[in-house]
Image 1 (cartoon, helix red, strand yellow):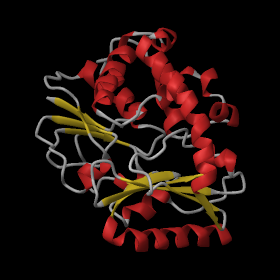
Image 2 (cartoon, helix red, strand yellow):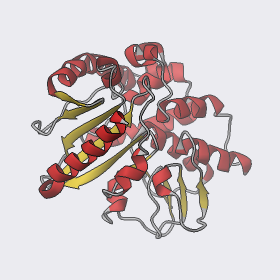
Image 3 (cartoon, one colour):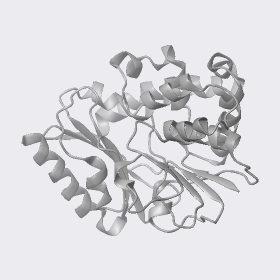
Length: 298
């Protein structure tokens, strides 16, 4: 039996609960939603999936994305909710299979995954340990896989104060704060404003800049949504596109998850992503930008 989840904070916290409640016999498989949508994920009977689109080969599935509403009843649990981890927690807590109370962890995961952040949280994550910890979750190289597994173990048994003092966590957290400072400069240089939509294009980078994804709403306060474009690592033929509604200027009416489901992607009402083919990416991106700009005008 194996956990299959996404390498973000919500996926990591989901794994914390599944690992305790189920007889997990194999290492966690960390994959992206696009791997499931494109049929390249190696899903097997016995797998327990969380925070990902449904695959009929799995034995249990948990999710909360509006673009992944199941067409039929499946084993596990699906709800439109702030986080997948909250759904997993509720499911196993009701069955009495968790060894302690994780209400604070779920509450913080809900805030992070639903982007219910204040400006102070965005500008000063060092004051908010769970938020800063979530920002240390990257997907850059093979060392990150070991880190995801480490966080699952730490969050299961260790207080947030002790976790933030762990040598590796502390080192990554310090790097995140430096990275965020640099990221603001990249945003200003590589972003164009279309209507009330910011479009940040990092396709000129082989290794694109990363940083606090909410900074764009501080740097461009007049915008109501952001689009970020970048190359998919280790793939010359794919482009990654992410869209988010501003968490400070709530005037966008487009359902992002539904929009991107038309491009083999998905997500929430307020945020989502998709993977585009290089050959058609420019046309697809123009269409998506036009839809978002049209919304900003109306």
